[in-house]
Length: 190
Image (cartoon, rainbow, N blue to C red):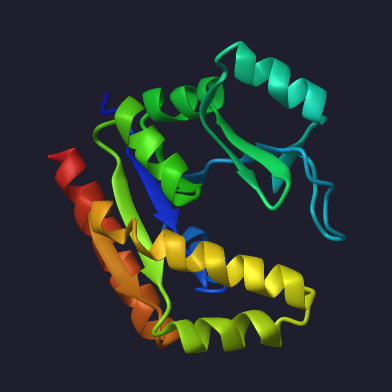
């Protein structure tokens, strides 16, 4: 039986990563999604075990100390991480698993799973990225500035990725993402 491929997708906040991942999961059959653990509280429509595993900071740090995570990150004051046991189970079952992780997490996952496919979603420009973040009407000015600062830093990591997709037009970016994933999955079967 084949081992599954970790398909890691990263992007700065506002680049459209979540939208592209949702489309990928909906339109490409046979993909599994890696549910991350987090210490942040759930949003209105989020469900434990479907969107995230919502755990306390104390529990997260205990699991981190016990080496239960493939990668962890502290993002905007909250811990996030990918549980090793959950990911291993899916990959060993031959599932190709989509992971939504930050740039540091992506590089850490690649160390554990060298067969990983790394895809970076980039905005057309920093100006457009700022417009997208502002148009969401979710963040304070201070939070917007923090997101933009982090985005500039994250953009410097795209050189470590197998592919960079510029999300200028959603349909075009999605078709490129779908083609990359399908091509890699076909190679893994042969």
